[in-house]
Length: 115
Image 1: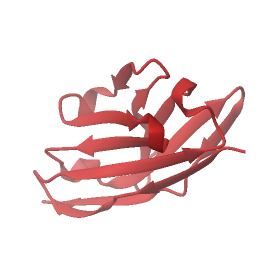
Image 2 (image 1 turned 135 degrees about the horizontal axis):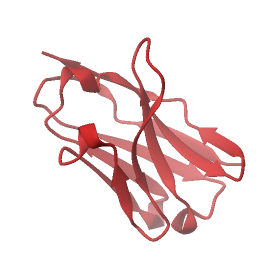
Image 3 (image 1 turned 180 degrees about the vertical axis):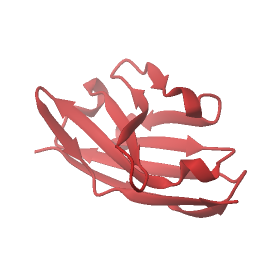
């Protein structure tokens, strides 16, 4: 059973930074693609960033150059460093693992960016 626990959200002013953490268990962490998604009020959940088992990273266009995904394999943790935050980054951020046809999600962590 895959379990994901996010932390690190909070409230910041525009231009500020936050670092989100996702601790994963129940999976071969070093072989697993870990994804960050976010969902703003009234909007669909969207992919933000991913890191594969090989360490390859991808980002959605709106966060490229501002967000950085990384991982700490010994501690089964994936990080999402968010710099130059904008009000439109306000959302609940979720960690995700997809295994076959099953999606596993954390409980989410709220990020609020004020102008």
